[in-house]
Length: 73
Length: 193
Picture 1 (cartoon, rainbow over the protein chains, first blue to last red):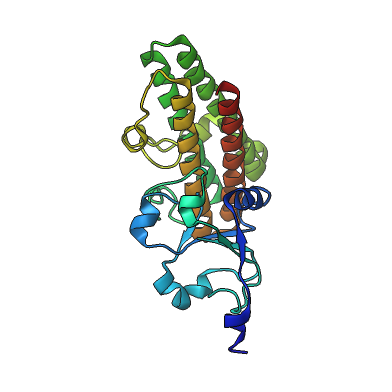
Picture 2: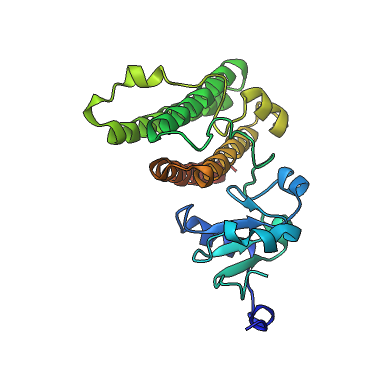
């Protein structure tokens, strides 16, 4: 089971696909996750993005709903 | 990291934020959240949202008086009128929440002052976005789009923080409407360019 996290392929969206995917859904039906540092988030982020810097992500997974799709950058 | 930890629908944005090429929001996660502590009732939530729409309308009206270009003046006036329709939508939601006892005059007395949509003051918006030319139609619509993006961001952050399920629902609905407003401004921009 531990191997799963290494073997599950992550899918990718280009900007146009991401915009379409987000705009086709209610704002509470998709998580937009910003894993950059707080200073980068402050300088500009996708509206509604939740900030969890990558170094903190493993400890804060409970803040994200696993049943919702997530667009991550 | 998320894939394989129970997150089955994870999409990486190619090129990261630099590749986004869309509307952006600015400042910290806490910006504007002094307006939405998370404990508000749906009634209070709607009163704050109404105040934000009203603050932005005042800003557009004041700018319409200051600019010289008649076309830009008309755009500011049109933007102010759009905010009236947004206020009407917020009040309609208030009526749904409180029922027949809804009174617009009493509702307006609950408004919060000195803020515009998105939770920043108009001066803060001017400093943040600094339109290159206040007499340019595209610069002004670009400013309006930036404000709507900031508003969408605030409502989504407030919805996530809200501890009241009914208020969360109201905030989510307003956020979805802000997204529609943003899209409409984008279409207006396309017609002008």
